[in-house]
Image (cartoon, rainbow, N blue to C red; front, side, top):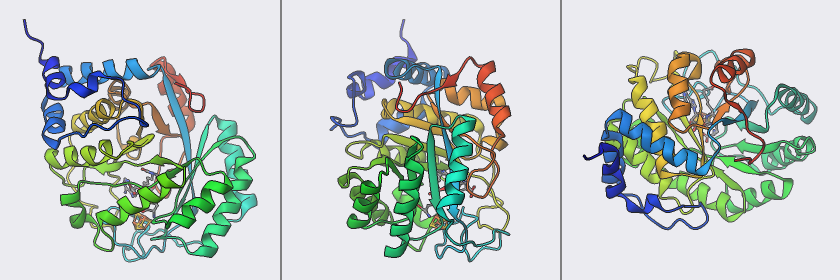
Length: 339
Ligand code: SAM
Ligand code: DTB
Ligand code: SF4
């Protein structure tokens, strides 16, 4: 009797070995990744669960809390983003927050149970004086013992080093989509700009948080193309946020047709299989997703969520609802870097 779940093992034998972000040199072919997407749903889920259980305690979920430390007024034209100044989305631009205000928010996040705190700024790229101010924010929050992540746009080498010296653990910079779809969504920078920043972050010794958005009108092949880019980063990212497009009125993608939720689940599963030791985060879009789809995402290998009532400018399930959902699924909060 042949098991369909074994097809993909034949497509990419290297996934049988224990890959680590430090040692992985294998390259994933888009065809092999697309073949994973094309597996019958039960076979894909079985494969993803197997990889998940080999690499993590599948009952543990990381809680990361976001704070928008500098909101709106962004010069870029990212078609999904409510913070781009050129779209009329009702988001008001604000200045960079002061350290006391950020510290108070980080304390609230920690008291609610978050172990990672991610500060986001709506910049194309930070200026030198911005980097100094964010370094101060990092030093201030770091004292609480939280893991610190920042997402500030494109970075130069020296800027990444300054943030590393201040105590930054992770830098979030998403590839967002496949190279052959990126230009349909963003025109004010290119894919190579994203890759260059990721290289600077890596060489500064900061861990990489890099993922993308699905549901922007891309094809399945292009979702496979995004996952291939992520999985072939050497090493692949330690954190991989998979966002479901949040459709914001005023953005060019406001009227985008809904993606089949099971296709989102498949994307999580394929990310888990191709990046076995990464924290795969079920990211934006949870508020619009039912509990059942979220549960499937955890079964597919997601082991991190954004935790807190707000993402950057849009809503997220409230913490009580998340704690109830996790309890119903016998899931528990993961300790920092705890497997
Ligand atoms: N300005 C920086 C940059 O673009 O890298 C950092 C902040 S930016 C808002 C961070 C990420 O948020 C984007 O790369 C994208 O993946 C995600 N994002 C923004 N708007 C979104 C939306 N409407 N739905 C889902 N994800 C979104
Ligand atoms: C990521 O991949 N998703 C987060 C975080 N990294 C910075 C941001 C989601 C933003 C959703 C739209 C908003 O709230 O503005
Ligand atoms: Fe600006 Fe980042 Fe939004 Fe693009 S995703 S418009 S760079 S804040």
